[in-house]
Length: 135
Length: 215
Ligand SMILES: Nc1nc2c(ncn2[C@@H]2O[C@H](COP(=O)(O)OP(=O)(O)OP(=O)(O)O)[C@@H](O)[C@H]2O)c(=O)[nH]1
Ligand SMILES: [Mg+2]
Ligand SMILES: [Zn+2]
Image (cartoon, rainbow over all chains, first blue to last red; front, side, top):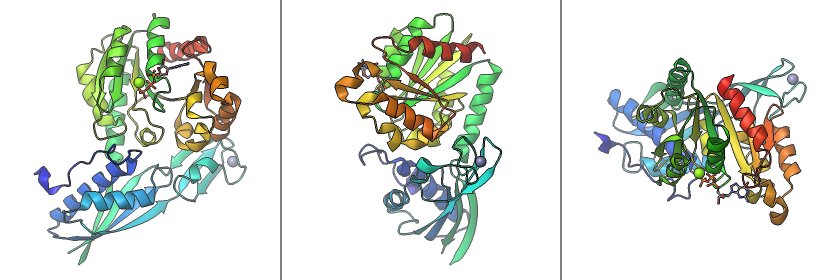
């Protein structure tokens, strides 16, 4: 049963810090599973919503998805990434919605009203496989 | 061609298992700490120090390592009930691995569970294990810009340990810059400067763990 899924790659072989690899693996497995359940034979595109608080480099993720989907029905699927903004409450009670770029956002995260960095993160940590297009 | 709405939370499974782990620990009155940090920053030696200096708290440990069991052996030798967990292809522990480790540990009477994560400042950040506190250990040998370069992990942690202050001068690292960077990224962060070799800062560190375990 496992063989319809891509083989696990060693993060170390790919110079590790390749956090994206394990995410790509889960995404591809879930996409294949969803496609098979609806009787599809080929996945054309995959749409993901990723919270900006996730330590994800979109280019690495794209690359990792290419690798792990090789030889599966998700091979060559287009990846669309929707950035989900961070929602945070600062110590003064302001709730901000903060956009920006993955990874870079983290070093400048602050309340949009008072610039406080004393924040409680309310949203922005998930990775949701939203939808796939398939034949 | 048709569109399939999937709406699956890819890392939500980890979060669910983490919540289950936390409940498991809470029911037994165990407080768990996820110890993260750069490779070689001093995670294992800190646990060894705790084994020696925190005798009145009953501890157990889970030692995460990519392939070896070297850290698990060191911690066991220091007198703590320990299980090693190999992450293999993954560069971080996840909640599922911790769940399995629970089954192999004798947790009777344990008050404090120390979880040494894989040496890495990036990946563990996204994976909740079911712990009660997250701590990050960095050391001066990684360079005094290491905090600035890896802000995310500091956003989430409760305690930051800046280790190897005994050799800061020798490696030309500005410890106060590291403190300032960490404070700027997360004003709530508790910061303790330590040397596991000379014992600097260890009283404060031991107190932090003791208060967590007994509190
Ligand atoms: N001079 C000095 N050396 C230290 C200090 N703390 C740790 N070391 C040394 O740093 C090396 C790494 O320490 P470990 O405790 O193994 O570090 P670690 O974070 O567990 O390492 P990994 O699990 O491999 O990521 C050892 O050789 C320690 O003796 C310190 O405060 N000062
Ligand atoms: Mg270690
Ligand atoms: Zn504010």
